[in-house]
Image (cartoon, rainbow, N blue to C red; front, side, top):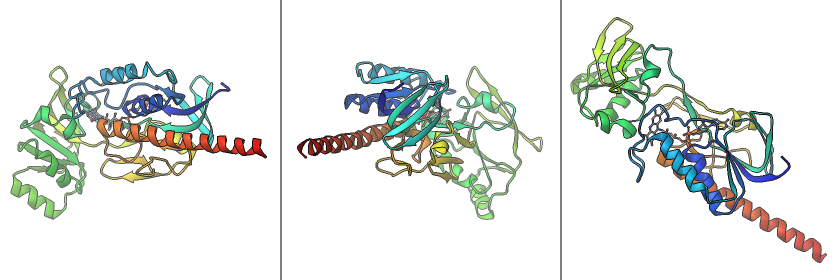
Length: 319
Ligand SMILES: Cc1cc2nc3c(=O)[nH]c(=O)nc-3n(C[C@H](O)[C@H](O)[C@H](O)COP(=O)(O)OP(=O)(O)OC[C@H]3O[C@@H](n4cnc5c(N)ncnc54)[C@H](O)[C@@H]3O)c2cc1C
């Protein structure tokens, strides 16, 4: 297509739709690419989101898209961006069918994908008994028998937080040893420590809770919930193909796209990041906020470029 969009937003999750709203209200012509389900799709409900506590993940995005309907300059296409190239003011985003879209700016809002460990029962219980975030799902399992699973050097850090939701807590490491100091703390707090990796998870899918955790050494422990952070990978390869830098966040086991903390512009001029794909506290509320910020800052850049072009053309005419 020859027509150039002000911006192509890759990803129609919370961050992408939030950015699109700001662009729509600024009458900016943007294309939002909706490549499929959001990261929290495995969970039945989303929590800790102002005015929407308990909303179903697909309902949240349906509401987000409905809000965009009245803004004629916003298009949402069900398509996947496979590559992007170019430079500020002149990007080409390639779509899955081979078509491409031209844009002055690119917004990467494609999120992160949680990499499921090769462990029987884990993927089935992800978001339904196994959780990464207590602010999202902790209240639902408050005071229930819970476990944390982390490397030996991170396990105390996790216990500190999850103990806020339940004192009936055990700690399991992936086979690596917890530091002596942390062992003493766990012992004093009455948190049993297991240092054999988990080999399988058993759960009640209807009740959406775990029933048993089985360790490699054969130990079986009855628990209703497990908090752990599996590694993440960027859901799209756009950051890599465009040359954006990433930073490794050990706590999340994720490579986040580096960006200016204010404007969210990456090291590649004209390429911005919103939501989980960048370095933020990963949550829906923060995805909303970073999307809105990107929409505003990019609009500011576009408007300033338009003014500069207008002034240049006026000067040319006068000369
Ligand atoms: C199981 C689970 C439950 C969670 N529950 C909560 C909760 O209750 N409350 C909370 O605040 N947070 C929760 N989170 C975190 C929350 O899901 C994320 O912080 C949030 O989804 C980030 O929004 P996003 O728009 O950045 O990414 P996403 O929501 O993942 O959206 C990115 C979108 O981009 C699309 N996409 C990817 N690649 C491409 C491409 N190449 N082209 C086009 N589109 C593409 C994806 O399909 C997706 O739709 C949960 C996470 C998980 C894993």
